[in-house]
Image (cartoon, rainbow over all chains, first blue to last red; front, side, top):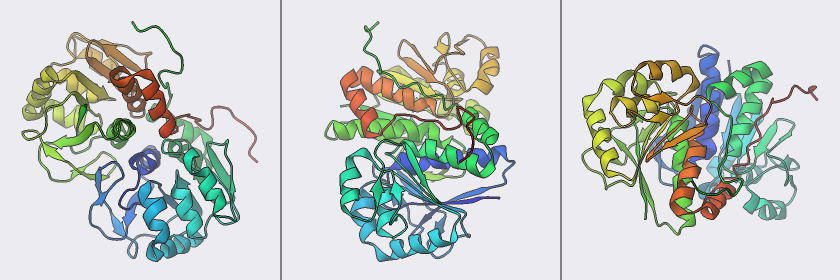
Length: 201
Length: 201
């Protein structure tokens, strides 16, 4: 049984946490509901995400089950607000020390770094934030990897990269064959359009 | 200015609508906020999605701005409940007739079909639902395409396929170069793990 805790806050980027949420919960479904995923925030008030979606947290920072996996999303709320919020930073440091894995998506890496969790680590972040994170010091930004595994800290590039990272993690936790089943269930066989420039029909 | 309306309901699959939501809203951000995306449901009560995430709708079926794009997600709520809900089916038929585009993700195609919108069309759906949708009649299920464009009806395969479809649509609406910028912003350069079977480090 794996318990996934996804931190959310105002102006968290929607796909940063919903991509991994879908992977973690699909993984649990395919394991007969063995696992649990919860959204955790400072209060149980609705969170207004970075692009305006309003989501209800399941738990408060001071009232949630012990986590095996912590996930920290990015968005303006991460890099502009929560990096200055001692309550959230202290919570991340405490939970990351107890959990098996501490993970981030996009500029969530800035919040992991501000909390001390990513200090001295190799990390990935959104391409537009790489210089700024590196300038913060005591961290090595890997610029050419979709996600970076350094010990039990796993960080990923911008927004959609959390899907790949989450699939890697469920494979690490529950086996490659299982991860392949999850990928099949969510039909993650990407076909981004406009990679070529073809005549319009 | 483009107005995107994403229908949600209990047991809608999370990534089915949040993937396109991220693409549509990122597109708007890169167009200086020119566009609007809203979540629409039967009531403004919180919706409990298929994997347990609770989301607040922005508008009711009878009180929303006129839509340019309608998006219908899948999930158990689509194929088991809403296909039997005349209020939602009538709304879909009415809105699809007025909107420029009617789209679906995953088993949302079943709901588009039950509403009459996908009748006589070529459509995509989740791989596990293809036989059942085809058996419903008066529809051609395309089994080997990530998303299918038939006139102004655009349907996509399971869960994650909505991201590709939404990128195609913003390119169709606002140009390929713009769609490429959106793809860059969300760093949609997929790298699914475990496509090969390599030695574990």
